[in-house]
Image 1 (cartoon, rainbow, N blue to C red):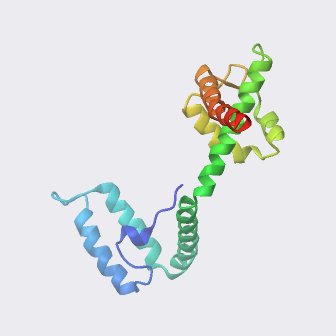
Image 2: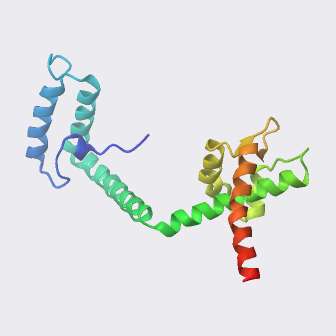
Length: 179
C-alpha cells in the first residue's frame, strides 16, 4: 500500500495539537459525510476517519509520525535527485549501453537474439533490480521486447534507435581524424 499523508488529508500541520485535530476532523467529517447532499464523498469521508483514528491516538500517532518523517525524507531525496542532471545523463548512457548490447547480440546471431535477465545482469555486473527501470523504458519505447522464450531482444525500432545513436559519433570521429 502507498503512504497516505494524514496531515494533508486533514489539512493540518504535523505540529497540530489534539484539539485542532478534533476540530478539523469534525468539520471535514460533516463536509464529506455521505448523507451530505451537497459535498458528500464516501471515499474522502473514510480517509478523514482513518486520519483521525490514527492521529487522535497518541501511540498510533507516534508510530505514524516516524513513518511520516521517513516519507518526507524520501520525498526530499526524490526532489534532490530530480534536480541532478548527471543522474539523468547516467541513465541515458545505461539505456544506450543496453540497447547496444541487444543490437550486437542480434547482429551476431539473428536466430538467437535474446538475452536473459540473469545474463544481462552478469554482462553489466549489475543487480537485476537496478536494470528494471531501464528495461521498462526500453520496452515501453518498443526498442526491445520479451520473446516467447522469455528472453529480451531488440526490435526493428530498437535497431533504428541504436543505429541513430552511432551515426553522430561516427561523423564526429571522421571530422576529428581528418581535421
